Image 1 (cartoon, rainbow, N blue to C red):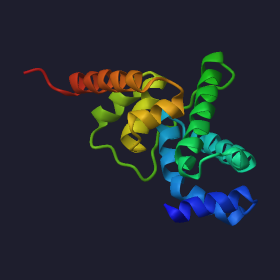
Image 2: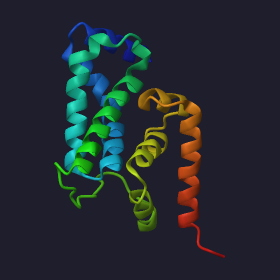
Image 3: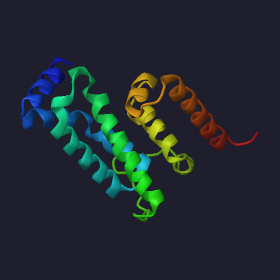
Length: 168
């Protein structure tokens, strides 16, 4: 953690090498979260790129070096929400590109059940399951109460469990 804090301090002073090291600690999580939320590898890549650019330009605004992960994930969640609004506005057509590189689903049924979730639910689930974030961290990233995060995650998981459990 000390290396991370040192890299944040160096990045705040303008070191692109330090920022690249910071980025290397979060890029896979960022991409997977964006991909699950947007279901398009092109849009996921675009959103991650935009996030990194904004984070690099505004790293000096980061107050607490230990909050780097949640800070950059907050930027990512805002970018994802904006992209999702574009989908609903009709300015971009959704593509059928749902390939997920480097990540295997245990079953087709699970993938299909996750894809049927609304966009907000997919974001919360991906932050929790793929990103490993706690409800408190997710609440900071998404600007919602941690109790709301816990209850929504519980409902999402129960919905998936009911969909995936065969009737006996």
